[in-house]
Length: 276
Length: 124
Length: 231
Image 1 (cartoon, rainbow over the protein chains, first blue to last red):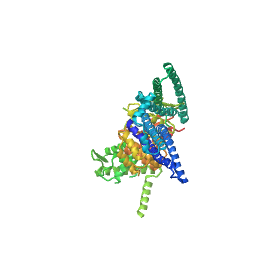
Image 2: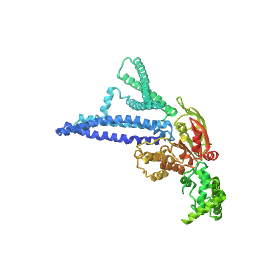
Image 3: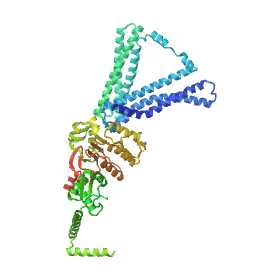
Image 4: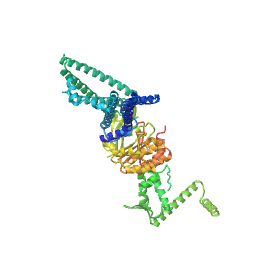
């Protein structure tokens, strides 16, 4: 049933996210051509320069819009589909509340990743476009694997590379999950009440933020102190270890946050659902 | 066929009366196959259980008969229909006389009125 | 086993008592009218039966089970409001119902929709209010469920639509199932009911068959209801 829910969720979100992503790609192509045109001498016509500049601006706006849209969709799907009138359908399907929440989580996660990768891709393309005169030059200057390896060795992170990458992925995934669940929990808790549901959702959001930032600060201070005691003098070998340790603490923290928020969400939907 | 219901009687007994009348008056002809209970109920705008109960009553009277596989049919026995018709006519006359008596007409006056009324219809 | 059973079922919203120790048993194979004035607790009872609310006290059982994944398989519910996503096409809704409900008969739904000139490419937002209500009902009645819970299916519709809706219910419900029709418009539904349950201020006032009320009191359920609730 989770698979079917995910399918439905993609159907509902793709109709907005696919055109938005497509627009980013098309505008990226046009904007990079425009940047070329603006820097070349082919465009001395003011009107043409205006148009090219406008395309570049639209490209920047599309990137921001895509990021905002991923966020809006994540919040709006949960709100509209579960807590408003559509909830009458969703909560009477033969599925569990866990499945409903996971379907929303997984699909939001995918769109955040897709949007993030897309933005990273077009931004690096634009950066290369500005800094290089031709595609051939880009390939010529592309560092070889051995060069990258030497650079990593110099930084002292080569040996922990796999661990660091894993940590990086975990940090990204858990941060997105915790972000989604933060909104989900606040909205679910706020909608247990019969009146002022939205206002209460915002109050819960702020309260949760406050509680977690207190916890985060406390744990970070404790973490730094522990490291201070462990390695009073820093060298590159200790540095990488300490960094990884802090990263694990951060991951653990996000994991706990996500778990707490997940159960708050599921419990308030299960026991306190109060559709209008 | 048109269905209408009064509020002071159970719906199933009104269904029995209306179907019986339809058979007597030939709206449903002898041997005609009836629609399914569900379709008849939908046409009359009543609950299928109620229609079922009415048809079972009519079956007991012999006005309709059911064959397990092919459905329900109006009886082909003319005497059953004739008897029901007579009974219905008698009932109508009885009600008529009762009403007239309530209005204070003696028997002779009622008959005279009937004759007069019939004369009117003969003219037209 | 009764298809729906309430045992001293209560539901409060803050200080408001929506249902007050309701005990009720409904059997399969009947069409039951849940009748009461606005705000009497009808919608609350149906939401509890669907697991959309959690009881404050007592319990409610569907086919012997507390509302959950298993009972939702066998309950077909029509809420008292438009609840289908506006952007969805008819074909997408058919997919959704077919995906989640094993007892959904897609062909029957398509046939009924075509009779109303609703084609599969039409979106909910392109439909008039009346057409939306009919489309919702068609989806709900195209399931071969064990319990149909219909909340105000004829509230605020014109007489022709009302007749269409009642006829659709009669023609399509599964005869082994129970159908619960909640409404305050008693005269309009009375003919299609086997039994009635009168509810007022969160309490069950009466449970009886329509025929027995007409036989015993010589008046329609609607008239009797007015008598019982006369203030």
